[in-house]
Length: 254
Image (cartoon, rainbow, N blue to C red; front, side):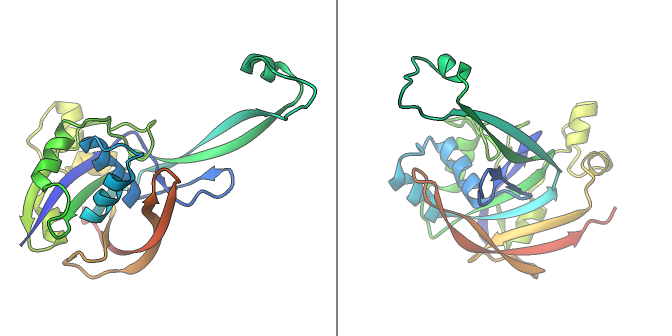
C-alpha cells in the first residue's frame, strides 16, 4: 500500500504554463508539475529564490492528476508601451516617457482555462521532503497565497487535502471523496459527493483524463505517452527541462 495526499483544484481561471514562444503564453489543460511544486512551496513558505529548498522540494514528490473538467479556453491580450531610447532626450518620469512620440507598443497574449477542475495525488519519494500529513496541514494554513499557475488565478475554494492509503493511483482517486460543487453552491449541502448530476451538467463532465509521472504505480493502462517541459531546473533563471508523462482516457458513464 502506498500513501497519497489528495487535493482538489478549482478556480474560475487557471493557467498551466507551456513553452513560451515569442509574445504568446499558452496554457495546458491539466496542471503542470512546476505549478504543483509552486503550490506546495507556497503552502510551506519556501521562497522562490531559495534554489536549494526548491531543488529539494522538486526531488521529493511525484504527481498524478485526474482531470475532471478541462474548462473552456480564454485568451487575454496585454499591451505594453516601450519607448525607443534616445540619446538627445532624457525622460524624468514614466509619464513624460509615455507622452513622447517615441513609444513602441507591444501586444502579447496569455491563455487561461475557465472553470477547469482537477484532483491531484501527491506521492512522496523515498521518505524525502516533508511528510504528507505535514503537507496537508500546510495546505490548510498556507504561508503564502495559493493560486492556479498565475497570481491572477486564485482558488475558488479550499483544496480540501486528505491523506489516503491505496494500492495504486487509480484506487487513490477512487477512495478520495470530495463534496459536490453544484450542491454546495445551490443548496448549501456538503454531504453529497462529487460528481452529482448537477456537477456533470455544470462542468460538462464527459471524458476523464488521468496523468502520471515515471515511477508511479498507475493501476490502469496508458492510452499514450507525452512529453512536457515543466520540470523546474532553476526558478530564478526560469529554466525547465523535458520529462515524460503517461495519459489514460476514460469516458464517464452518465
